Amino acid sequence: MIELQGIVQTYLGPTGPVEALRGVNLKVPRGGIFGVIGRSGAGKSSLVRTINLLNRPVAGQVRVDGQELTQLAEPALRAARRDIGMIFQHFNLLDSRTVFGNVALPLELAGVPSAEIGRRVDSLLDLVGLSALRDRHPAHISGGQKQRVGIARALACKPKVLLSDEATSALDPETTRAILGLLRQINRDFGLTIVLITHQMQVIKQVADQVAVIDAGRIVEQGAVIDVFTRPAHETTRSLIDEILPQALPDSVLARIRGFMAAHPADQGCLLRLAFAGDDADRPLLSDVIRRFGLDLNIVHGQIDEIQGRPFGSLAVHVRGAAERIAAAVAHLRGAGVLVREQELGHA
Ligand SMILES: Nc1ncnc2c1ncn2[C@@H]1O[C@H](COP(=O)(O)OP(=O)(O)O)[C@@H](O)[C@H]1O
Ligand SMILES: [Mg+2]
Image 1 (tube, rainbow, N blue to C red):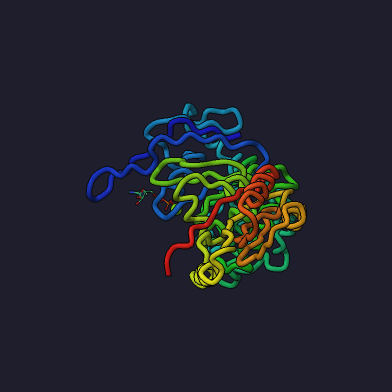
Image 2 (cartoon, rainbow, N blue to C red; image 1 turned 135 degrees about the vertical axis):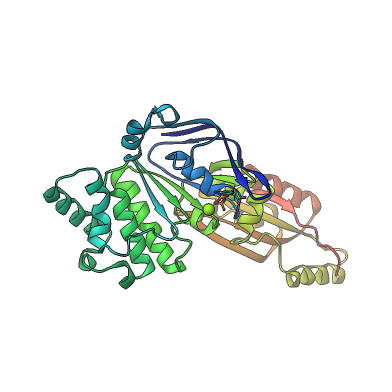
């Protein structure tokens, strides 16, 4: 649906040129929610604003729905932009207009007859749950409601693509969940392709199908969300995931295991970290291991979460038994798709 090729963006900063995008290639498939995550300054806004050419790159091609936007002259580009809606962190509503008036604006600009505007805006406000607030001004509604207005406005011209630049970053977690739920519903109901820019892994985890990680103007990793969460390859990805799913074990856990091992020199066992995702997580793998390999197994730490209804998580288990049986159990778990590694215990 969207194809970026060799995108380079350079700004003139106070101390010289700033390379915001250093050759970005990205393919966003039709009909999904595609997340782009990165830290502040990574180039996310530059990237998303390239998709509708709000920011014209110094090099590279932008193709949206088969049209090469970088080749279009101004009138054709304006028409193409109507197929691309956008929502923003700070909503960008007009304070002087009512809720209704804000949603109506793009339709007025597109020359839609006023009776048709009335009908369309009413149905959009119904969709985002704001019918009762249609005559309020932005100053008198909450942040979540403002973003609902932003979403209704972005959908007014029936776009094929919706771009979201940190649309939930100014909202509390509860409101964020509600807005992301609304975006998911719109994605499903209208088959709208959504590109969602964020610095929060929580947002990616809740709603994205695929994710690309941007770091210093480059895409450093991408894939299905569940794969990236379970097998992050790049350091930036790991540290972003770590914020919601810490990988390091608490010192207290390590100290307890060290204490046990010191007290049982003949039967220390080992501490294993298991990471699993998707369907494996539903199988009774651990009780399997205990039964089949006759091991003693103690879960000392763990987190189990969900990505779009699929369980994923990590466990730390202290395993005791004969070394060759532990090795066989590890092989069995790996064969079942669980990532297994031995945890270093370090020193007190
Ligand atoms: N208009 C601009 N002029 C100069 N530098 C800019 C401009 N916009 C962005 N930058 C710089 O480009 C880099 C990427 O910015 P941006 O795309 O806004 O990142 P993000 O949205 O990930 O925080 C940053 O170093 C930023 O300071
Ligand atoms: Mg930004």
